Length: 180
View 1 (tube, rainbow, N blue to C red):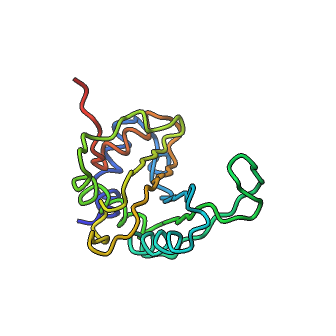
View 2 (tube, rainbow, N blue to C red; view 1 turned 60 degrees about the horizontal axis):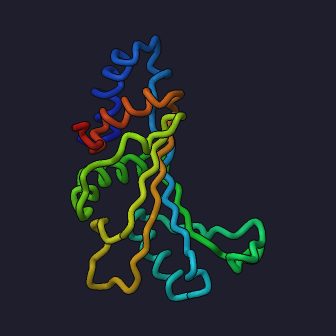
View 3 (cartoon, one colour; view 1 turned 90 degrees about the vertical axis):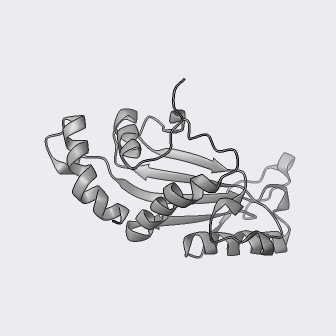
C-alpha cells in the first residue's frame, strides 16, 4: 500500500484517536518536503554545481532551483546575487513517494545509522534531517560519482505542536532512536 493511501485509511483515524481531535482536518499531515544543498567553498566550481544539480535531479525527479545570496559577505567571499546553493520542493504525490522511499530504502542504506534523534522535530512539528553523503539514495550509483555532497531534508507539516509532529512521524514509521 502506498504511503498516501496508508495515511488516509489507517493513520488518520489513529492520529485523531491518539491526539483526541474533533475533526479529521485538525489532524497533522505533511505539506511539503524541501531538499537543500549548500555549495560552500565550491560555489565557483561549475563542474561541482553541475554534479549537485544532476544528483538532486536523480534523487527527486525534479529540476532544482539554484539559490542566490541575498547579501554580500566579505569574510566568506560572497557577493550579492552569487549562486550559493540548490533547492528542490516536493508536494503532493511526489512528496509521499519520496518520504516512503526515504523511510524504507534510504535510511537502511546510510552507513552507521542508529536512528533519527527525536530532537530533530522542532516546536512547529516539522523535522529536519541532514545527510553527510548523497550516495545513500538508491538512484545514485557509486560508480559515476565525482564529488560527494551533503544535503538537508526538511519535512513541513500542519502540526501545531512538537507532540503532534512526533506522533505523525512515529506513525509514518520514521526510525527514531530508542531511549536506553
